[in-house]
Amino acid sequence: MVDAMMGKHYETSLDRAGLALAAGGALGGLLTVALVAAGQPGSWFALPVGFVIGAVITVMAVVAIGGPLWIVAHALGKRGPRTAIALGAVSGFALFLCGQTYGFGVFTMPPIDGRTLLFRWISAAATSMILSLVCAAIAWTMWRVAYRRV
Image 1: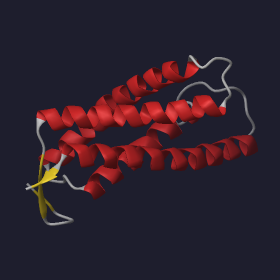
Image 2: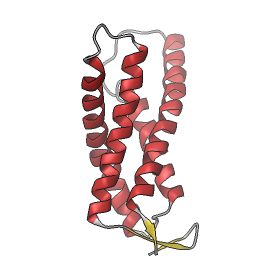
Image 3: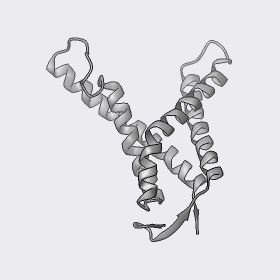
């Protein structure tokens, strides 16, 4: 297939897709280790536990959220790095914004005045922007591992 943006052919295989999933999980685990270390844990044992938990949650999120989106993009021939980065950033932004705003306000939230709610949404959007950059980096890394130019 041809990536419309770059005019290049990209192909993958099942083994490379598995390696890409492992690479994405490893990046998520390393990010979790950095966050756990920044929190100054009481025991060194928290670091490997954080890595495993971060890697597993990252892989689950990639499979559940990014997988269906990437299958559609792959089927449409949009297999380039720009597509991977865009899908990673947008899906990461939406996931984290949803998580910080009680499902975009769908679920019951504690009583809050309008001004505080506005600042909560602004803070959630800003935090989600930062995390969407991390998701885009993970998506690009996974794409780089999975796809080869033909």
